[in-house]
Length: 106
Image 1 (cartoon, rainbow, N blue to C red):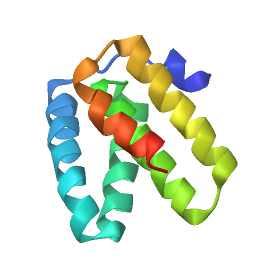
Image 2 (tube, helix red, strand yellow; image 1 turned 180 degrees about the vertical axis):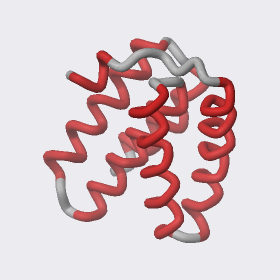
Image 3 (cartoon, helix red, strand yellow; image 1 turned 135 degrees about the vertical axis):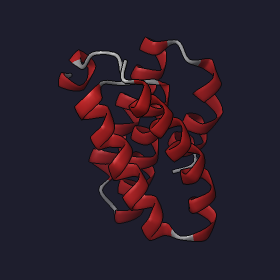
Image 4 (tube, rainbow, N blue to C red; image 1 turned 180 degrees about the horizontal axis):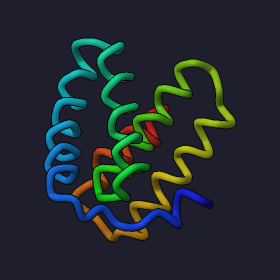
């Protein structure tokens, strides 16, 4: 619940970085899982430091997938819930496919 109290991201550099990193994450998924871990971690750090944006929901959903792969089903479910709730809170329909694929494929 603390994650939902975080303000909206307003820093333009952080917003651009989140957008770019989100695109990299899609590519990295097919190339290098270790890179995915680093990118998801970076996106979550940006979200915690600068606030949440539409890409934050994708970062949380990706984190959920990583947790599922490690066998931590409880944490994966919680992260999925956060991702879907944030998606709804921000009303960012353009992230629906990315978030849904991460949440519902694991």
